Length: 362
Image 1 (cartoon, rainbow, N blue to C red):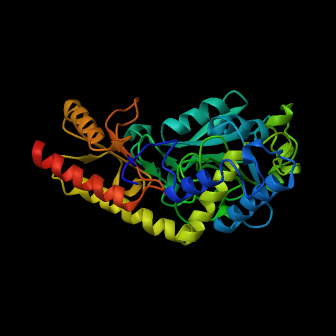
Image 2 (image 1 turned 120 degrees about the horizontal axis):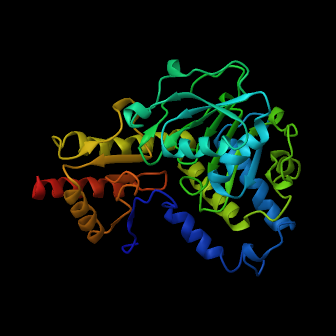
Image 3 (image 1 turned 30 degrees about the vertical axis):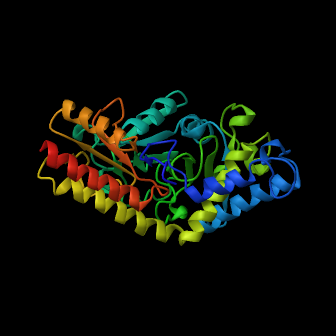
């Protein structure tokens, strides 16, 4: 479609055009039922078919082993910041958090409301522009869990390999990079991810939790905020976000058609190399923000000589059809989010624009 923008939004983010077209076709009449899926009971066979197929696809594409439950929840990662300590942190134990930036900070703030929190490692001294090495982590004996943010969308940093936390469950916020590459789920006790980056639209949050962590919380927790509630009812305890789950279903089928997580990693690496290559060969006109060994393949952050030049870049890029290149309001600068659904052609177009902008302004 000629009118489609070059979408580099950080989230909600680009969705595959094929998925949007299929959803459009089925929006009014889902599979000959005479109704939209949004109009149907979540207890009916039609929606349940979509619901359980979506779980099956997730299990297949992420190679989720036996002994884990897959949940479809609401409230985004922000609700998970609280649900994790509410369910997993008991009196007398500590929760260990790796502080890598803005999203980790939000998780830490919430956890402190429910118990004792220790910082296992932090890169604050480096402006959160790198991911700590596994050797930097200091996990207290008997910790309830270790929490990390897999990909920091604001700083543009990403874990290249996850640390081995031994017998202490590893909890991961994978909201912005889930399914961008193969994942060893068995490294984690719990994974959560808001869908609006790589999995679908906003409105549904995926939780993958090891079954031994579904024990009743050590203190009173509202029924709706207990993982066990949703695990026992296959995420149908109350009305789930049916349309968002359906969209995740379509996105997962799209990922599978492209070759799965392995293919996504190859494509994402190619897109990232194109963009980082334009930054690195610019002779300092563009300057990458994150450390070389921590660069995200999902969110590419960069700066220019001054804010005036950055504002001109944003203005001219918007006029040329590029959307979402302004950096996060808290840090400024520039950012291109290149999630799974962002086509390689969009990245190539951005690189051409960057080269031309440098030629005119360098």
